[in-house]
Image (cartoon, one colour):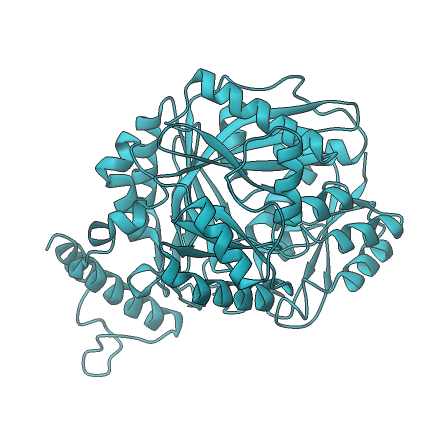
Length: 501
């Protein structure tokens, strides 16, 4: 087992990994940018080394510097978390060549599954159901148009070397095709350095369901059940849960077997995720594979009782993983909400700034994976994820009710957050019934983004009071004698009155 691990990431996922390291008796090393010098994850580690720089390119993507720090610190392995270098095959190779262990899959698997067209072809060859479309990337517009007509509209044009919705265009008719293909290629080139695209039939009324898999070096590959990820905006997940309200025992077994087959096809090792689309007729199709730990992994941990980071570390150290067989029976139900520093009423625009006041939610069945504290600064340079709030219940209904209670308890001042939006998702009738698709946000836009002036007024009033307190100003002075003209009790009473309007 490793004695020391360098965590090549930041924020909540860095703290998440360090906590497991501490439980396993492993020391952790943090690396940090200039902006993150005072961030909580830096102080959570046993050791911390400066990367310098401000942007991701200047800091957390500097893999030569990260490897050098790991070797100097005496770390035996590097855990990449998610994002940044987690799915960079060249980085994984460089780590191995330096004599360190990369806590993740083999570079060959990352490279193979990172190319969407190569992954599709591999799945087709191994009998894993895929969405009808091209097996290879395509650049010629006229040839691509012919294929689109053969498949039948609506179709999706997708980047061959990326994800996260970049380089993706929905095309509903032939008149839209040429412009969509050109713009998709342009965006893909800018985002991934590869402008090639491929074509897929658009799955109508889809559900986005993924399966967590583990594979070790002792010949075992298993799945740990599914996660429902259909609540999305701009192809980015915002709410996840396990298990899915759609799957029955038979469909879960079939999809789980396909997920295991997909992992075995690429020689996978470690923790990974096979993503599927399920159509309105309950037919499922391979979408892609994420060769890393997922943001939403806590919901799987809660319903299986496993620590997925610990399993990653065990596998990387050459030990057998804990589960000996597929998991298709779960302990209760878990829901995760991603709390972002974004303004939902302004098209989810980032809301950077200082957190003036923070009171997290807790209580029965609540877990929070967070990378911030009161006084933390939310920067424009990195992903605006504040924390992940996870609720567990004995069934789906209780998990949703607990999540609602936790979201309403959560208090954060100084920035916009997605909390009001998430509360409305939890309150939504279709969400509670489990009758939704990936178009949920679009279909319920008026309800999810309605204006609530009284809450906005309370938040603004509270933020001003907190800011004045932070600056050590005396307010409501009476004749310069330093006494408060209005007592704190009256201020609190006024805040309560505003809430009841």
